[in-house]
Image (cartoon, rainbow, N blue to C red; front, side, top):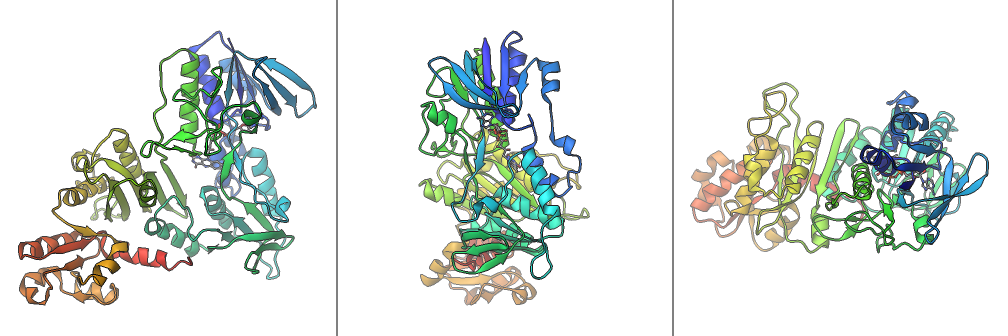
Length: 551
Ligand code: FAD
């Protein structure tokens, strides 16, 4: 059996090496048009700033090492220019010599990845981007030679505030350059809900990254970017980081089915509309686990996992791809923000019923030095309790909580199950009641109706409908910052000051929701119709800030 693979990185090389482990006698050839194979594209932003100082560490394998261990023939600088499905051949152009030839296949694997979305604005040819090691070399050299702007500063503009744009921004700041991000929408990283992404936004601006929201580049000039509103941003270097699109022109020209997302269509065994052609990675659309919709999720885990699965299928194993959750995390200046499954925005868009909780526990026991807050938002089905998604952020421990919830969703667990998860605990690592357990307790109270809640974005409507809003924190906390127009009755005084409470409709809040929960129970026992502000003042205040962003 001769297997030809187009694209020698995550999806392609996972397919190639797994296939060799399963089929010692298969002939395997990988065509890769760049100069390198199996390179770590996720590490490229950190290489340009020398956070990763060894270029060699990005190159995980070479054609020689892959031949030595796996007898896989890897041809770099070799671009497949067409697929002839009838003849079952690919046409290859050697980019070093210009030579062109045909190569036959029994099975073909396409893992051509995604390419940067190209903006169609004048001067776009001046922009740089980051996709492979050669790009990183070019970018690194260019960053060393940025011409100073009129203020004598080395300025860089980045068009797009997605994952790559933000990673570029952080790393270019490490070099000491001035960085401005221009983002078309009114939020960075649109996958996240506004109150969950605002802290990362603040972290970026705190470290000197200027973020211009609701702005669009009209032209890239020699000295910077002109926006559609006429304003100018000085920049000796401009990057496009406006997302990626599936690189599937080969598949399209070969007449393979392309999905409505623009990604290559595959069945649940990664088989394209041609039974002898498989595909994996960023070029391919994925099946969303929670919506059932086809979607684009250009992430390394899925490229590796589906590449491996392709090899299993070619080797005759009866395996199926499980749908994708879209679990992702980003860090900048020591602050991480992650998401798995559905955001509130995605749930609303998909018409999926959901209940929400926000919690703000510590990453480990508060009495052990260095405890940091991990803020989490968890979505679950209000009828079954099944977990639907989570977002988390903080200086430490957000990654662990996102991974636990991703695993819980994959296992079909409910919000109540989070209460019972036995997670590793010693004071330096976690808490006897881990942040995940706390999410379970809070969610359980909402799920079974013990604590009716109101979300930050429902508070105004509740007030307009006549609800009284009471801050149950201490006078000191109330003085330091409060929701405008709210009265202060500390939770410990509540039983003695019931006459001040409008029992027929009242909303209580504290810092994070815990004292609000106690106040809710006291007032309920006294006949009140009461709701607790979910996530307390912590969630409300950050959401309020997010809402002040230019629409
Ligand atoms: P790719 O890794 O893009 O590989 C496709 C290869 O195919 C390319 O090398 C290309 O040269 C080659 N190719 C294309 N067309 C042809 C042709 N006609 N002939 C021959 N060769 C061809 N994901 C995460 O999950 N976490 C991260 O932190 C993260 N960070 C990233 C940072 C950067 C800067 C980039 C660029 C990506 C990042 N990603 C991250 C995304 C991740 O790298 C991709 O999801 C993953 O590499 C996709 O694998 P793939 O095999 O589909 O495509």
